[in-house]
Picture 1 (cartoon, rainbow, N blue to C red):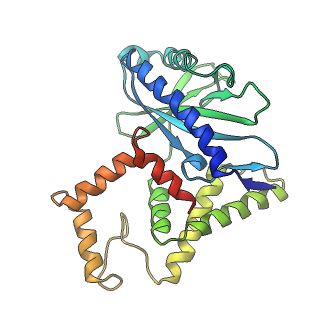
Picture 2 (cartoon, rainbow, N blue to C red):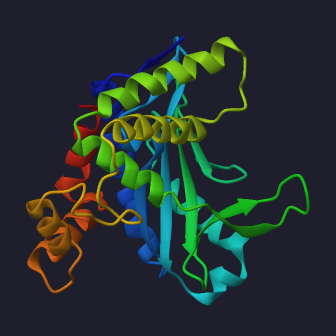
Length: 272
């Protein structure tokens, strides 16, 4: 049966991984690879689960901001460079070397500790879409960029649920769904898919009951559903010439930066 891993246990692993990834980022900069590690998935939302005494993990994206053309032309060299750099900083008393998985770099514990972490390598294509580096091991053994679906819509819904103080409903429903699929032996539902299903369902339940949807991208604002104060606040946060807009952008940037206290605070608050 799936249960949530405690916040204390997750924090200890998160701190270890964060330290390794910050050193990785700095070392890659010496190769003229400018990157940003970002905690994603259940770890970013304080929703890591394990089945009984089974294993659990943390997922990270290593977003490449810019790099020399030689790595763009040789993606195998890019991934190997990152793996070699990563292995300089993993603690051999605790972790094994990172190894090349199809869509990530996986680092396992070398002890009996049932934990590992994965690092996916991302880069924006010419259209500005994020792509994940894939190693086609079972085909041509080639490397390529695979465009990934944007999760901005889900992020916005999750933020609006948290603003309503209803995040506990997401945690409860997520746990129910994980155990439902386990009881049915339906193992084709990834944690990411279950999370998206859960957020969509809870969002619909909350805002359909309220008779309207919150102000936000794709929904707009209406005097029929919002007060004048809410309308003014919405307008200010969406006006680039207003200080509220810049403050909101700065806050978002801080919460996306693992080197900023606001990054970890926003994730520590996610289980409330």
